[in-house]
Image (tube, rainbow, N blue to C red; front, side, top):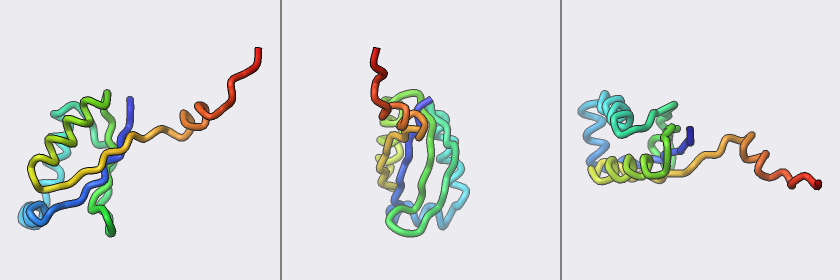
Length: 99
C-alpha cells in the first residue's frame, strides 16, 4: 500500500487545542483512519514542522481528502509527500536488461 509523509505545522489555534486537550492528537489519528488511511508512525519534532506522520493510504485521492479535511479546520498546515520504499526506488533506477 502506498506510503505518504505528512509534515505538519500547528497554527496558533491548534497549539491552544493541543495545550487544552493533548489527547486530541490521538483523536485526529482515529479520524485519519475513518477517512481511509492508517497512521503507521508519528513524531513530534522541533524546528520547521511540529509533527511528522508516516501514513499508509490506498491512493492519492484518499490522502488528498485527508490533507484537505485536516487543513480546512484551521489548526494545522500540512505538506504531503509520497514516500517510495528505497528498494522500489533502487529497482526503478536499474537500467533495462538487454535482450
